[in-house]
Length: 496
Ligand code: NAD
Image (cartoon, rainbow, N blue to C red):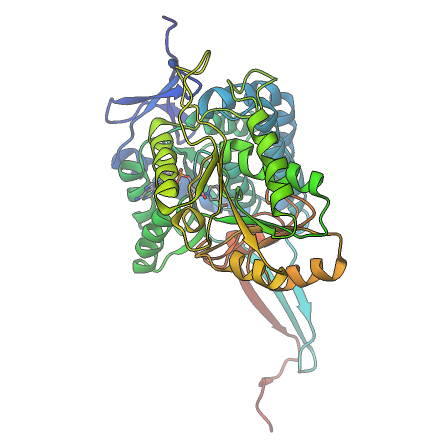
């Protein structure tokens, strides 16, 4: 058996073993016999060391001119480009999604790094007129301080980069805690930052479980902001902890996204969009399409077209360029998906295809699952309400656009939505009435670009957005500045 490589924490500019002396293995979900790497099972002490280092590095980093911070991030972008293919290959090995998608995941980090590096020369504030003579009013952005970045496994480089890069350009220092299924990709990202010349301690990384690392990290008194992406259940724990300590937090959480297919839609286009939204990343995207709401006039035709394409999907190891869908990330996730398929059948939905684990040739050592379609789903069923996070799609019938919008909005989540229609009036009505943070017209629920705000309403978030210039509002505090050059005491709002 090949020797397993051991990866260390990054604390105070040094690669260090955990004080626990313990490690955990990350395995390839397409072939569990392959151990991708051995990582540190870290402790409260490791977290404390990392936060202490990040706190000590803050004053100097904050004083580093933002354009210089941006220059380092340009180098990060260049290195991500240089290593893109090997990063993608390792990412497929550690979390399973197909190689085309892991290349896209790295590309998202590249886009984020180029875009955000430029913010080093903007970080725009406002100048506004004063109500008094000889007085100048402006607002400037200040870093928040030491940021804890807690991330999930489904976008192993993209999501960490969405937090790390804006945090750094704004002058914050960072402690990263990657998901235990995908620490390798974050290790690579940290290595790249080191190679790009990021000063020691500005970025620290501690691996380990949510309980042993995530909790002490978010609870640490020197952490000023927790930037979290993960499930709504964990997010609400993060919120409760942070609220108690009056510290800032931004939450990006679950989704139950839907695509509406109207009777005037281009059905071929809609089928491709639904397929990509439902089965891309094996359904493990926060923006995955897990409900398709189809106008009753085209329901039969659309369902038969979609069923055919679903049955034809090639499931396999993501490193095989021919695979169209990889495995689920781990056995727990596979059991969860299997259980939801049972729930769907018990609730009276009609299983059109799928619903089982796959163990055929080349699949028996991985967490593979059949692409699954349910018909006759009613909007209140659990499979239509709860986040499954797997390749399971529910088909729901609707009578009209208003009815479809009502079904989409009847959800505790509000991340992404889409509508296929050729009618511009319907498209704009959908934009106006769908209660989600993202709406696509004639496109799938997935495929966000980094220059626009990303996030959702209701149980998906807490009002913040990642990416675009919106990210700057998470990672900076506003300061309003009034400069009175009158030489007299001028009183705003007070009449003489
Ligand atoms: P998760 O909530 O289980 O874990 C997310 C991170 O939180 C991991 O690093 C985990 O170790 C850590 N964690 C777990 N318990 C913790 C605790 N008590 N205290 C502190 N940290 C803790 O989520 P996951 O399974 O890794 O990811 C899947 C979920 O993420 C899905 O619900 C998906 O919708 C969501 N997600 C949301 C977005 C978004 O932008 N809205 C993007 C991707 C994924």
